[in-house]
Image 1 (cartoon, helix red, strand yellow):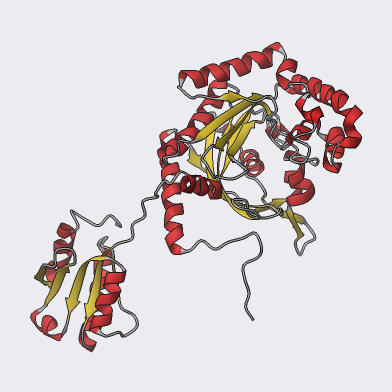
Image 2 (cartoon, one colour; image 1 turned 180 degrees about the vertical axis):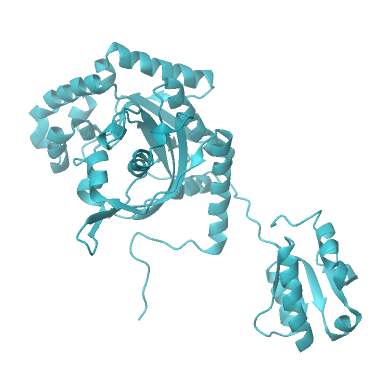
Length: 429
């Protein structure tokens, strides 16, 4: 019986995996430069974690979570997003007690959301994220945004747009919630069923609706910026000033609310403006979430972070025709002739690999001609030829496949010779 991968999942094959490795490597370099440390959390958590942190009224909790009972009857959920897991780890491992604050973290995680699969949005998705816990400085907001923009810049993306907004502090947000309820209540029967529920549970989510976004009431909805108190307005001005000082251009969108309950103050998204990218242009979303750590049993700890979809990042690179440099060559390939040469070849390949030299050999008992063809297909820079005659003389023939030059090298000098030929050592060491 043929069994395919579940709907909404995909296989990343070796050639594509090299692209992922390159992108992830570039991002890790940026994180290291900004002094962020990597964190890895479990792929599943107690369901209550997401209910309490992400929010009962969100689409993630209501519709998209992969929830299951374990053999002990406990409710567990495959993580749908990264911030809640990092916040839980921060509290559980008492990272708030570290001498160096704030705690600056990054992660690469697989997330799971049961939603309709579409281009760049899968049920199992890969995400890069950043979380900074322990500082309420607006400069941290700007740094987190700067890190994200730097990642895109280093990878070669240019057709991107940064959109920011402020959701204000708790008091500002509550005043705005009341204003939204008053504004939309006369039109509630005209809104979709989701928005009708959101209006009571989380009115800000109404502004994020894809179904009713063209409704006249959406266009005339009050702006959060009109409900910011002095403290919240000053905070937002400092964030914008910091971004301007860094030379980062941005656009303020009062309707940018983000879908998760824990956000307050700064909210932001980075979008692709590349031609032909598609209808869903958001590459990254994030914001500040002061109060989340306390909700999970920790001390008063402000936080900010973002999540970047790696599938969408790769699509954006493709849309801008950015080539990801992938090594498609092999340093060396061993061709053997005769049973004794095959035995000795196993030892030679092992020793070369132990000294950092990339090499492969035949494992299908193919003819010499077929072995050379295999070396060609792998675009091997050098082919090492070992037969019975070479074994008797304790030498091996090394052929430069680009120039065609061939040289006889003593077996006991092969490692030094190959390192020299490969310019002081293999790049695969």
